[in-house]
Image (cartoon, rainbow, N blue to C red; front, side, top):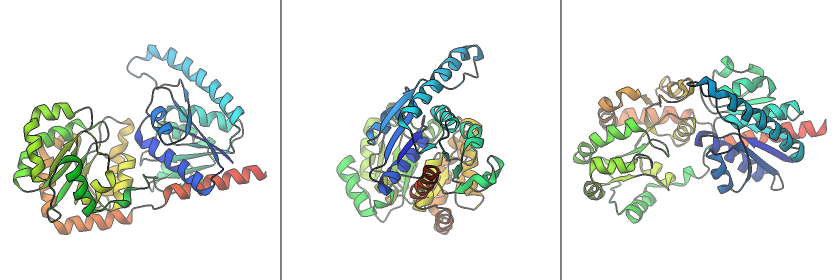
Length: 377
């Protein structure tokens, strides 16, 4: 069987897409998989790293601030549709999977017009523009949150959760302590509480600024910290906190780094997590049962991270802190939650109950079922 997978732009789209591809290959080692992405976007690098072929389309997003520039955007969309048609005609997929993003819109629309069954995967609690536009073309729409009938036809919806990185559950606190000592020269104590700060691979400005102002107080209180600043902000954090201070903090169980290569162990040692509220991050927190403080990014379409976070807050599975309040309230929120172990346990129990396990395998099963049904017809 042949499967076309399209989408990207952010890790939140790429991780699920690659996870679905891996699940399809696990179920059928002879399956052929081709990705379609947008030229110049993250997927053009990440997908080949995962071992899959990808073809880039020149598709771009519309410029809402300068509408007169959209003539070239429309031309690139036309070119992308023509190229997508050629790709579908030559590859002859049995099914097409769209995970959102510019390229997904062009590829899935063309696939549907050419009689290829389309399966959509929506990561967020507030549906993305591309998937909303494709809802009538889809044979099935796999979602991560309840209540998605306000965006999609109810009869097409299947609650599967979001596929996440398969190795996340392999971490242990013991191995984390060894890893932190070997890689960073940091001394962590298994008996002390640890907070993990993650703002995404690029970082989160407000979270970083709040942490820069509060890291000394956390160190003085004996709280251990793993703080991923993101590559964009690391140099600024070094200048603000001081390179010597960052090095000295390691002896107190505090690591400040632009990027974490070992997320399974970072999660394993963390008692609480401070994070943005992207779909992939929330799915990971649910799967691992982590008490968390969520700071939704204000710079995303339709404010979908707030919708993601509220799905947890309504079930007392997380704390939501507005981005604008982060500088003033983050430090207090961290120390208060660390001091309230019964609240931590309640949040862990509630967020774990929301986890959708084996999401990638379940989606892959549906993709294969639909593809096989189409082939028989």
